[in-house]
Length: 303
Image (cartoon, one colour):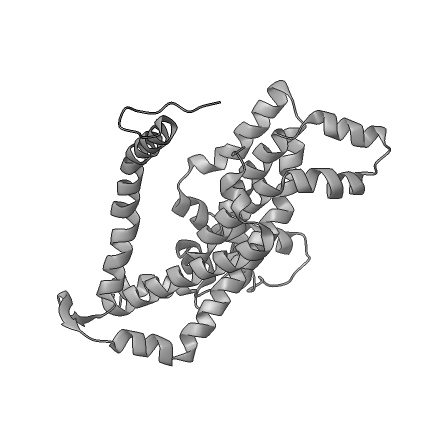
């Protein structure tokens, strides 16, 4: 089979391929410009601000490495970063353990019952994030619902202090806030599984544990990864829930960053900490992607 040749000797197929690539770049240019304007440019400004000197008016364009020397030379920031990373990992794992059975139950429902369950699942998220976080204060506090109920039943003689303003409360609040972000991708991933594969496993007398291990988990793995990535990123950068429910013991890297921009007014140090957090998150995702196939999160719908 011969290829068509232009009068000038050029390959027609190659010309069409080049034209196709040009059209692809043209179609992708708005999204690319949007990404550059709203992601890369702000990140570059944060990095630039970390080298500026803090003044009474905010920032002055006097170059200094004082903030970086303070962050890299103080052990407390590394300890706080590790603590935040530990809280994010623990919250992600707890959320995953709670979400998978709920997603599996939801995927096995049909008709009006499924619609009702989805409605109930989304109902708390019609209320604002801060309001839902505040709701835990009258539940976990010394005079809250839990302490009052336990005292009324005679199970305790005085209110429990460990329910609030510690890491336990932070984990509880974060799991509650971000549970939906884990359930939805897992549910959608399970929904795409061919029912014939499940029926075939049952026909081969597969036990429930074997079904979960060899059929459901491998086929829903992209949804699991997607949910874990979203919950980890959201938890790692959360500061409202740790600040409200954790108190001093629940201080995280994000709450320290927020304090620098609000209370302490040290924008240079806040920018340094913020850029450090971004670098750590990107490095963690790149490292994890080498072992758990993180590309499946972004390519699961690509044939």
